[in-house]
Length: 114
Image 1 (tube, rainbow, N blue to C red):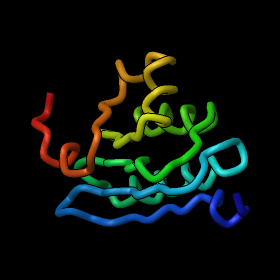
Image 2 (spheres, rainbow, N blue to C red):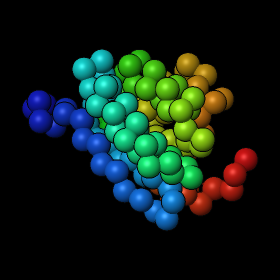
Image 3 (spheres, rainbow, N blue to C red):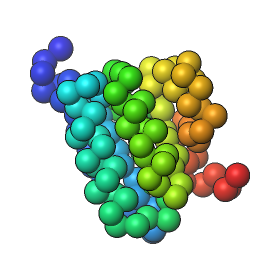
Image 4 (cartoon, one colour):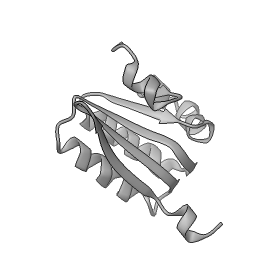
């Protein structure tokens, strides 16, 4: 796998007042600060809700879990879209008890507030 395909890509879009941060590549100790920076940028615009789409992430390490914890504490509302390889570490660590995890961005955007 090339370094370019492992590189983290972070893109911020808006759906009404909801920030949707789409992430691709690998989230590890080296790239986690870039993910956190993207989250901080999104939160700087005071979204009603932050959706972090990790469905394009192929590797999600413990540093990524730390960034999600930061996001939960910093955001008024956080929803995560996760593939199986991202969902597993979230569930194993019990973070799925604090983070709302969805299969698609559509589901995350259209879910009723719990």
